[in-house]
Length: 117
Image (cartoon, rainbow, N blue to C red; front, side):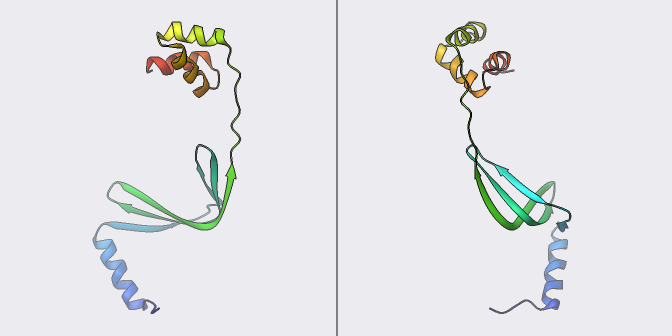
């Protein structure tokens, strides 16, 4: 595969700048973590480049990839709590149970969540 000559690279950078694109290397980044529902993707020793186009910023990350599983803790939710949240939020018992699971058993947050606050 043929490489790009320094002259061609300069032309490309000139066109990129003319198009309103700003490309910069982000210095000092030790790791980048993507948190998903059931796992984390960790990029060690990353090389991060930011590209700005208008009011949007795009990050390109390369490095050593490591995946980690996340342990999801099951919270014990009493039927009494489910009934209380259901009555306070005016929802079914099943909706109250789901909200309590989503808020890890926090009654106040579950009620506010169900009320749309």
